[in-house]
Image 1: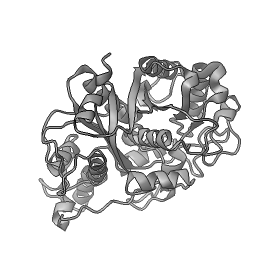
Image 2: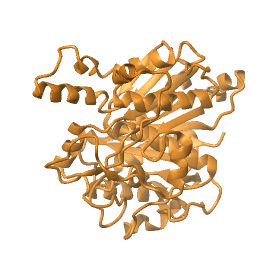
Image 3: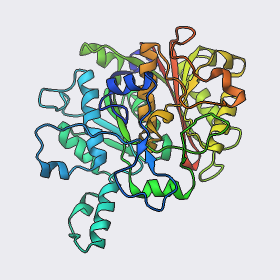
Image 4: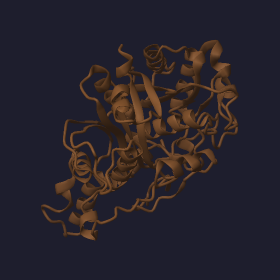
Length: 405
C-alpha cells in the first residue's frame, strides 16, 4: 500500500466518568482512580446492582435551557468529545464548528437516544406525554444529526451498532475509507449514555457485579456499566502533511470477525479473538513480540475473561512474558457501544506517554496471564506498537493496532 494513504490520528477527544476531556480522563486513569459510584440517573429499585460509572456532562456554551433539553444525554457526551478531537487536529473554528464543511462521519453506539424513548414512556405512564414530545427524537440517527448540526458539517455518515465491538468497528471503517481513497479525512468515534433499559437488562442477565469490578481476577463477579464518548480525526498522512498537522500516531492494523458461537458468550478458546489480533498485526507488519501494550476487553464476567486470557496465551505464545495487558473497565465501567472508541483513546495515550494503566482491583489474577497484567505504570521497555481489543454479544471481535508516527 502507498505509505501516503496509511491512516494517521491527528486529534482525539473524550468525555468519560474520569473527566470531561481526554486529558483529565487520562490523568485520572494513570493515577489509578476509578469512577464507580451510586447510580442516580434513574431508579434501580428491584435490581441486584445499584452502582455504575457516570460521566459529568460538559457545558455547551451559548445554548439555552430549551435547546439543551432537545439534546439527549448521548449527544451531550458526543458533541464536546468531537469538538476536542477537531480542536486537537486544528480543525475547529472559534465558534466551535468544523473548518472542513464536508466531513465524513464513522460513529458507533448501542443505546443511541434511548433516554428519550424512556422519558416518553414515563410521561405516558403519568398521562402527560405529547405525541411529538421526546419520542420525536428517539431515532437511531439522531445523534448523527445533532453532531452534523452542532459542527456545521455535511457529508456521508456511517453508524454502527455491533454490540461492544462497535467503537473499534467505527474506527476500522474510518481507516478503510482512508486506505481506499474514499475519504481524505474522517471524524470517527463512539458514544453511549447510561439508560434504564440497558442497565436493568444486564442486571436481569446477572452480568453486573454487586461488589468491585475485577477484570482477570479469579474471583471476578461481573461487570460495571459506564458511559462516555471518544472521537478521533482520522486522515491520510499526505492530507495531514498538506495542512501542517502533526500525527499523534498511525492506525496501522485492524481486524474484525464473528465467532458464530453463542448469542452472549464468546467461544471458549477465544479463537476469533486470536484471529482478529493476528489480522491487525499482519496488516501493520508487526509481530506479537513487538506489541508493547494491550488494552484488553476485560469485562470481569466469568466467561469472557477466561476465553480472553486463553486467546492472549495463544496469540503471544512465547512472547507473552514481554506483553503488558490491562482492562480499563475497572476504572470507567463498560461503555458498550463507546467502549472500543474510549479504550482506543486510552491505548493511544499510553503509546504516546509510554505509561500503562494498571489493572485495578486485582487480587488473585488468572494464572495463565498473571505475569502480563500491568501492576506498574512504567513499562519495562519502550514500545512502538499498542493494541486495543473488544469482544461483543453475537460473537463480534475487533482489534485496532496503533503505532508511533
